[in-house]
Image (cartoon, rainbow over all chains, first blue to last red):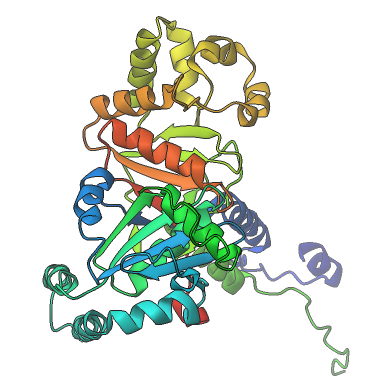
Length: 213
Length: 202
């Protein structure tokens, strides 16, 4: 610019421009942004947790309740298959074991139907919380009370050795969605394995010795 | 004589506004992000609708890969050193100060305690290379996993245990970890999952 001026022969003292070229600044910022985008994870929206209840304590308590009509037993098998039976297993009728799946129409529909009262109550409570009518503490307290309902189903989750971790999380997830207050993860018994085998064989194993629980 | 020279348009663009935007973005990224922890194995966590956030501090993370190999990570460096010393003592191994210092800056660890000394003697990038092939033994005969967790608990009573397992990890491996935790009376623990949009499959 100054050169130009000299050529033109203008002698007026030019006021120095206060403009700063921001291009290098932008370059540097872009570089930093790229670095941050690649090397960091956003404040972990993906890492969530499920708190698990005491296993051994619950097991003893739940086992006595298996005869109860409230009990639903899930059997998680390999290849993302899942079975359930209600209450006491019927070893002579292979159809007492029902195959289901992890989609919304499978286990969830069944659980929501059986847990109607609690689900309705919880929905109402959640609405109240959304409208800021109750505090978080009240919400937790109330939801505990609702989930303690005496007619709500109790779910027992049994996984075969072929199941994987995702199946377990999916099953636990259904508990969360369907507001099941009481559930337990229990080791699979030979009797349950017999049920599965009988289902696969379409009941042809009937009358064979049922392994003791 | 009037000047008729057509004024040449300047190609200089004012970068101030652009700079403003980038600085804003930069600030956003710096404030909302946390640095990715280096993990020896890549793990895809299963999705769940649970919305409880994992705490930032006092976490003992149990990383389980597809084959069921176990790696641990403690977030407090001082605890890490103390735990290593305690576990080493249980197995009759003492570590030098230099080895402890090396262990302190490692993010995840997971080698059998007997191999820890030779492992720490390796170069850092060599360590990263062989770490995924190791894992802490956790079976009925040789359950070092239990002593790690027990000593970590002893060191920090507010410790939260978080299991981060791959979605295709077979259930028996998970069961093994869970029952090991139960044997040392660690009944409350968290399972790390990723967020699933509940509406997408409803």
